[in-house]
Length: 452
Image (cartoon, one colour):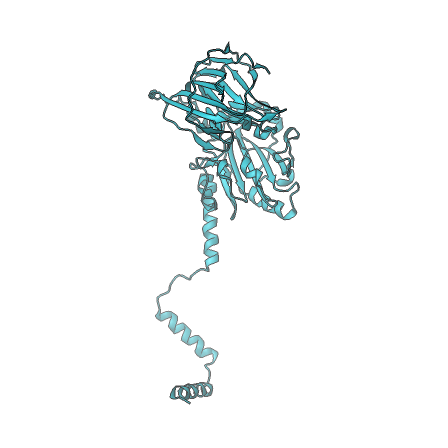
């Protein structure tokens, strides 16, 4: 046995023989130690400290608006400016919101989900203004939930008072009703659960829709959704907001015009053994100052999607002229889906059906028939062949490029004038259209095209 082992054995035996201190000795020793050492603030348990910090975050968010509350969102995407409307996300949830308080033309939008939002549903870090996170909903898992809320000040919609019953926060999921607008499912092949709740809250008409990855919400998932609804913030409408909106808009000096000139090879769909395209055009209508409810428009389309929620995918290319209003939509469907120019573009090209090409296409209407069109769509169908060449030449108010947004390449910069030309790959001219910011629109088509 080594010397170290002997020493350890001796110390252990000696410790056993020593008398243990009684309670009085222990108490007196502790009191002396505490008086000799400066008193420090007691350390909190880490979990308590984290809970306190989160609690402060929620209080700050409720006081200043959801912009700060969204700092706890795992997604890191939320409105850049607090507007006092939206969701303070729970741990593990993701939040988006718009940066405006809402108008009848363009409501304020807030979204929250227990899954990350698809990249296509985030526009410059903000909620997609159409209030339909379509790409996220298409891939929503069985236990996934997306909650979308829109907000419009009630005094701007006095005719809707009976549709929005007065309610107080928090809104209750049990008050929601099954919601499939006009019998249309967002995802018909794998139906979603869809529930709607309307309420008048603090001077705002709130329209709230819950989308679930399965047709029915389980009890557990319903409880989680309710906990998130408990964190909905609706700050009372303030008169200062009306005063701010009533100020005249700042008038900026016009910038130098910029020309965008691109050519694409596009593939029309095959219908009844024939590849064909449709073309439509209308003049501008509903002018308010410099904006149009329906700007001058011309487009070329084919049959790709039969669903209202994806109707814009039928457009191969389009051009518009003039500044579109927030409510102006590229395609209007009977079931109420909208595709606003401000999101989908004043100029757009279907990136699934078209690709850039260096082929030369002249801007000529020689051999085509047509002229000025009215405010109602003038539609024509044309046999096209396997592929068509489409050229877009536009004069824009400021520098721009075509960028990707969902299924299209587009720019949202207002257009002063634009020309859209299509011809068959053989060289046969098919379409010539021109739109002007004055609202005028012209459409010329091949004599072989026929009215739709």
